[in-house]
Image (cartoon, rainbow, N blue to C red; front, side, top):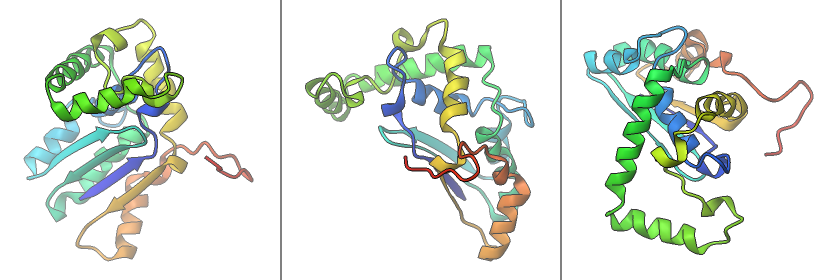
Length: 199
C-alpha cells in the first residue's frame, strides 16, 4: 500500500477556476508519458487485487492505493508518474469534467456538503475558503482550464509539498531503495540550491 499527500488543496485554486485542484486530482489518473494508456494504473491494480482512491480537501490532496505485496513495485512505478509527467489529454479532460459535475450534483442534497457550503458562504468573501472547492461544468469548462491544470501541477506538485508513506513486507531500508528505484526522486522540486522552504 502507499499514500502520497500533496499539501495543496482547493484553497490554492485560481479565482477564475474554482475546483481546479479537484479536477487535477481526477486528471492525473488519465495516463502519463511513461504509461500513456488512460486506465493503465487502475487496470494494473484491478488485475492484481488492488484498489485506489483520492480526495481533495481545502489544504491537501491525497492519493492512495492498496495491492498485494508482490505487486507493490509495479503499482508504485505507475503511481509515481502522476507526480512526474501526467498527460492530461483533452478528451480525458472533457470526460473527467462530466464526472466532477456529477459528483457535485450528487452532493447538492447531502446535508454534510450543504452545511460545508453554508460555512463557506458565511465567511469573508475575500478569503480563499469562501470559494466553491468541488468545481463543476460551469466553473471549469473554460478555454484556459486545461492549460491551467499544467500550470497548477508544475507549480504545486513539487516534492517540498509532498509526504509519502509506503507499506510493504520489505524492511524500511528495502522500501527506501524501492522508492528510489521506481523514481520518486524524479519528482520535481521547486526549491533551488541554498533556498529554504518557508511555506
